[in-house]
Image (cartoon, rainbow, N blue to C red):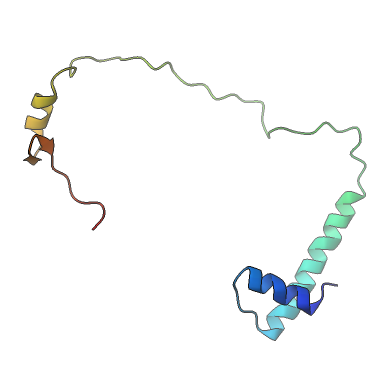
Length: 97
C-alpha cells in the first residue's frame, strides 16, 4: 500500500489539491497498478527480442519535384489577384493581436 505522504507528495508534484477521500482512493488505485506491474515482472522475457516500433511499415514520400512552373516569376500577377494588397504584399487578417 502506498503511504498517505507519498500520495500528498505526488499531488504536490502534479499541482493538484487532493481531498482526504481522494487520497485514499488514489492510494488504492496506485497500489493496484503497482501490483499489476509486479505481475508483469514475473513474465520470462529472456527470449523475446526488443521492439523498436510497432510496425514494419515504412513511410513513403514522393520526390521533391517542381511539377508546375506556370507561376514561376509571376509574383506581381499573383499579388494583383489578391483581394487586398498593401505595399506590394498580400494583406491578410492578423493572427495575433
